[in-house]
Image (cartoon, rainbow, N blue to C red):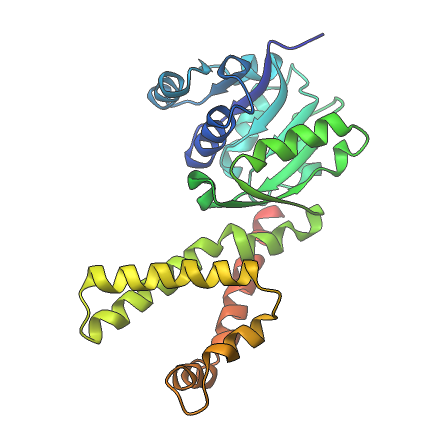
Length: 270
């Protein structure tokens, strides 16, 4: 039987809101084809007023009346939500819950035929420059399903189709990565201020340099090591800064930080 709504969303936090805005404002989905629930009524009412989507205070109603059900709740909240859905059987599920594996989602929802796609989005989704990694292997037998899921996230940035086994590593790179970038920019700003720049001057210089550097990586066919050396004239200024990074094991620090993030993601999935 055809469902009233194409997409149902349980949870209306920051990331879910970004997904809803991306889907509606890009015209990928009509507002009337989306329904969302959240225990914070003021939050969903605000989203309903902004986008014209349908809102509900019942997770079960959302699950029963949509074709695709997106779980956007905190992992520790999911057992309670799953309990509420005991008597219904959503068949097409999308999850952005960090660390909650596909089989665990199926088991907690109980008896029934469930297909689950897992996605790891990141914060820049909110400005249309996100990076999403998605495991859609449960849906490989239906092109219409994989296209819907892919295009839903493509509204907010770039999408990488990958295997669930790699999602912990994805969390360590792109999921948590924006915080690393913010930390690096903040450190550049602090360094600029110490060298006599104003905070606004240092921030403008640091932010645009990071944006420009990323754009060069995107558009250049040169390996990153060559791009680095292109800035480092022998006996010049840049090489002195790179020496300090190398002497202080910059690559090792980054590697250790990512590994710690991946370990925590693995712990949450157990």
